[in-house]
Amino acid sequence: MLTLIDNALVHAPRPLGLQQVLVADGRIAAVATQIDLQGAAVRRLDAGGRWLLPGFVDLLTHPCGGGGEGGFGNRTAEVSLADFVRAGVTCPIGALGTDALGRSLEVLYASVMALRVRGLDAYMYSGSYRVPPVTLTGDVARDLVLIEPVIGVGEVAIADHRGTQPSPAELRRLASESRLGATIAGKRGAVLVHVGEGEQRLGPLRAALADSALPANSFIPTHCNRNQALLLEAFDLARHGATIDFTASTTPEFIAAGEVPALDALLQALEAGVDPACITLSSDAGGSLPLYRAGELCGLQQAGPGALLALLREALRRGVTDPEPVLAAMTSNPARALGLARKGCIAPGADADLLLFDPATGRLDDVMCRGQWLLRDNDLTVTPITVQS
Ligand code: ZN
Image (cartoon, rainbow, N blue to C red; front, side):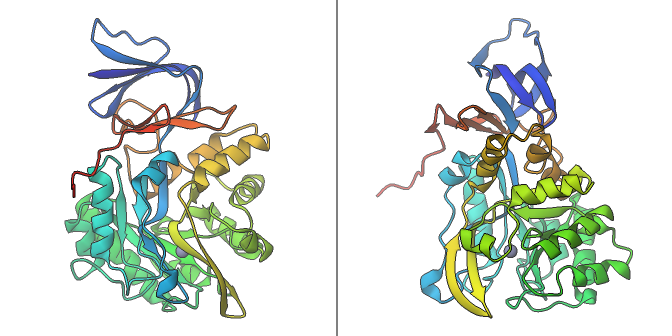
């Protein structure tokens, strides 16, 4: 059965005005002001003038939890499918992060596949904070070739006391291995780099790129809004062609410690003339948000997937007149940076990952992934768990 979404203000993420969108076999079949259905049977949905957005592509999530500094009692929880769906994240990319000791890539893979079976289109990175990287098959290139959901490597930590302080040569090697595997598999193979609080900031990345044949977009540094000095270095890297990622999850303590809120970071980047296509936003959902003072852990919270939707609402509340760069940073930009060609846009041939968002109320009541409604009228319609006691 075809689905026709009518009377929707389409942000593709480029604003297209009022359009009809036809969905067939999990893909977008047509986008036009008046689609000729030629008598075909369709299920119609009147969007009532709401915005129709691509589902969010969240390039840093921890579906099986991530981190848990300070002891096992602080271990963060898994992110539920319902939480991703209600947050509009139809394409979460999972990473291990800090904890590749109490967690494994096998567990992450299982979490990603569970999300897929129940309706989301999830992917994952090989590796973790540590170099040499943990892998599923013995090396990252093999992981990219042999494990379909693996689309890159990350998040590899630099400038962080919890990382392994990789040298520029080690970062180069990792990016080259990832590119090799990605080339064989027809993937993009970007290396997501966690940038910590260390004074080195992006120095190790710059050094890795300076003496190599690697293009700047081989790496995607994340948490670039951690402080103003890092943010300015990130703008410079973006001017050389890198994609830079801002973390939308935050805490009042992080802001007090100098973090630039992700929306402010994005607006600053645009003001500074950074190409909007080089900017992405991610939630870090499931990851720990540890607060350190003088090297001592003094607080820990867990990030959730709702940070992207919250940022969009905040942008509208603050009267941002052009939402396209904000939306692109959550949809088409991460999809392009990761090589997910059918994600993050509303166009014929793209996957039908769609959100119906009311800009007046900020409500997100309808979410579709690959043509299946996972949320309708604010009711979850996800595949139920079949195991029964
Ligand atoms: Zn991180």
